[in-house]
Length: 341
Image (cartoon, rainbow, N blue to C red; front, side):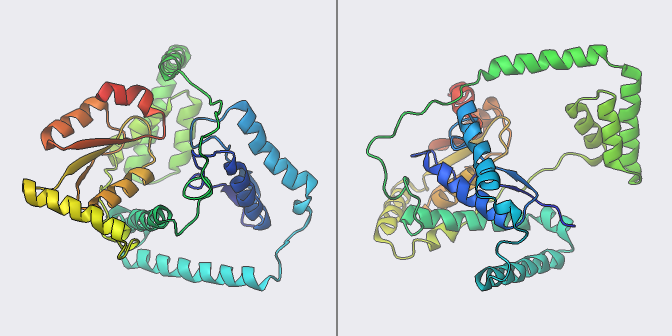
């Protein structure tokens, strides 16, 4: 039996008029339920702004409970069974998936495809196309590009002192290391390295045994990194996709014309460095912005994920860019941006 876990979309959540997100999440949760998912995570309506509050978390939980207990939709094995429309959509999905699988196989398999960056490139291309449609108003986002509020309602958000949390976590790790059987822990980490080096045995089982010996996640990751090395993502900026979404739009043409005039006058294009700092691995927004600026005529430089403020400052100093953009979905504006400035 295929068991499926689903999560409602984070991309559809909006910072503007965020209570609309309750409706969006409900529709997405309904879709997952109709699709027969066995497990479901419903996002809180304020997650585009901060970590969820107890109030927003309760709404997210109750969304599932209402679907399950009040609508009783889960009492039906296949509510959409026999729907010609759903069957047609399913057929389209299958054919599209086959095409993508074929592209991966042509690269030599999924591992090779990941190494060449093919799946990542396709995701970034789709994201840029989608953002162009939103920015043009072709795809309607209620409260964002249509039916916007004149004044946004105030919203109570969860505020976390990340410096305090970090100190607490460091203290916890110190207590774990002080109380564990160090010899057993190191033995399990050595066994993990051996499994990785020999490419035999169950690597996950070895990692679990190391965790049971109270090895930390960092130590387990470091043990495997000793053998496999660290993955270095290929950073690329997609060009042409965002601009294609605008076609002959006069406003877009006017902006590119002004940037072309700047380039002619200065002998160079205006430049921007887009940074991702801290423990924030979400780069969709940064890549979309990079693609848009590149299509407008900017010279765009992308930093790597998880960089520190000093590392970004060094890049900026070396490249002599005109502007720096920082993308953060982990409250980097509160600590990392001031440090960078």
